[in-house]
Length: 214
Image (cartoon, rainbow, N blue to C red; front, side, top):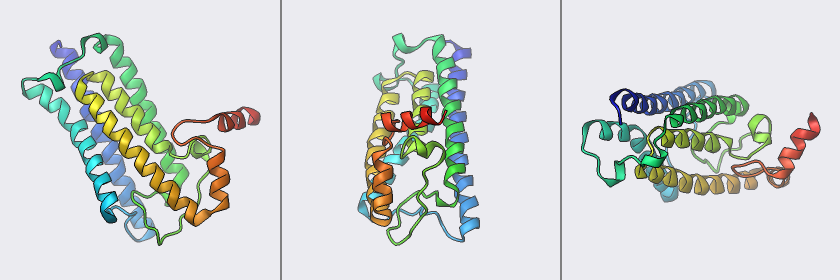
């Protein structure tokens, strides 16, 4: 890795992590002030605590990998995969990261006061079906994955794949829990919404609906 491009890739990963998680903190603070309480930041139950541990691994890996590559001798886990280490990777990484960050802001806007981090089964939130939620049920997780795939293009290592796998596993579990909660409080309305949208990727019904509008 040349000094210039190597540092650029590392700074892009660190900058993206800082931008994303600063945005989450600001969103949580803004919502707390608006609704007068925490947006379910504290995990409830053993299952959510394990999920939190998974998310923290992703965050620590996202932030820590550039620092490890920068300051330590890289083992197999942090060695660059040469056939993926290409100048085009910087362009693809920036494109995916930008789309992911912009998409996340779009989700925040669509959710409004219904944005939550954890699940409180005693709380009833509004069923949001507009904006990106008209295409998929969990677009925030999709945009997170886009950003992490962008990070993989910046730093194509085995560790980047591990982080992506941990994130995907946590996402599937979290999405399943959220769907069970929303089904319990919204009933038939959520069942209809579920049948017309994909979990993480648009299905043919949601895509057809968009094309029919145009």
